[in-house]
Length: 139
Image 1 (cartoon, helix red, strand yellow):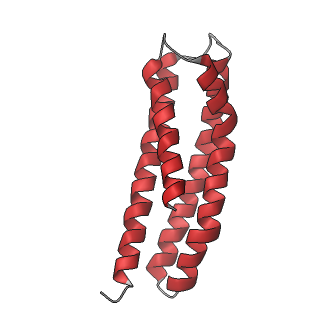
Image 2 (cartoon, one colour):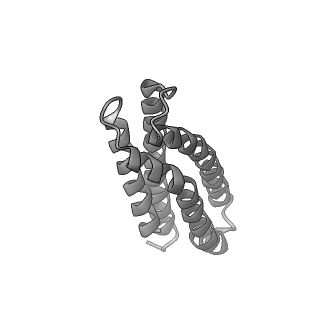
């Protein structure tokens, strides 16, 4: 899970760099690369999190309804992030081709909304899983 979170935070850093470069300093190559890898990377990370960490958590703590509710919330957030990533990838692809119809303010708003939300999600998962482990460790 730590590796998945680090990969997501690194992704956020790259997207923030793109947002900070708007409107005139955009690295078209970075935008094109981000457009191609954003959706697949995020989906792969989520599949691994849900298939390994969430499955283990559900198996271990599934008798606690609040744990199941939290896992369902996190899965829904994964889905929402993936949908937003698809929209963002389309816009990044257009930035990568120097499409003049891309509004820099809108692009910056989309980028900042995405990476701010993703960072918040990662922090919540980290806190939630730490709390879960502590609450159920017998300490």
